[in-house]
Image (cartoon, rainbow, N blue to C red):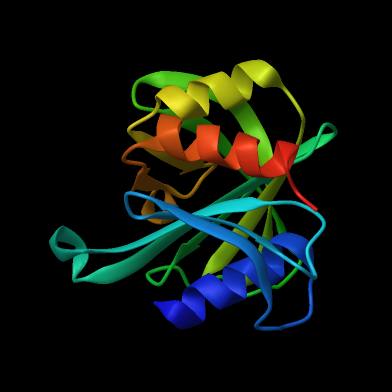
Amino acid sequence: MKRFLLAVLLAAGGLSAGPALAQQSKVGDWTIEKRTQDAHCSASLGYKDKDDENRDYVIVITYSDKAIVIVMIYDGWEWEKVGEILRADVGTDDADIMKKAKWEVMDTTTVRGIFEYDQSMMDRLSKAKRITLDFEDDDEDSIEMQMPRAGEALAALKFCEENRR
């Protein structure tokens, strides 16, 4: 799981590895942090799903006034082409956020979506208990990830972002 979190943090910002943390806090199982080598704060959550062969699920959310970045890792995926652009509908619980959103394959188990900053998207994410990706023409790889305490985690992310050094 720690390997997945490190990989996703690197994928989220295209950053070099480094142990230095300027700020870090926990909200439930979420980690909110601003590493010294990162430009922005991130909120990350990782868990194992006993109902899915104990597979690892990881979600990382970061944002700026220009973009929202969501990285999702699922060790059940086997993407073949790094850099490939996939299309997926994004939803929370029973509400659609975005149709046919672009997701870039980062490695065999990781996709990243970069979206123009939209406060209504952040509001929907903060109210969500889960996030879903419904990939075009590929129901097998569609996924639902749990997001417990998302509102608290995103409030802490906002606080971190407003107070980053």
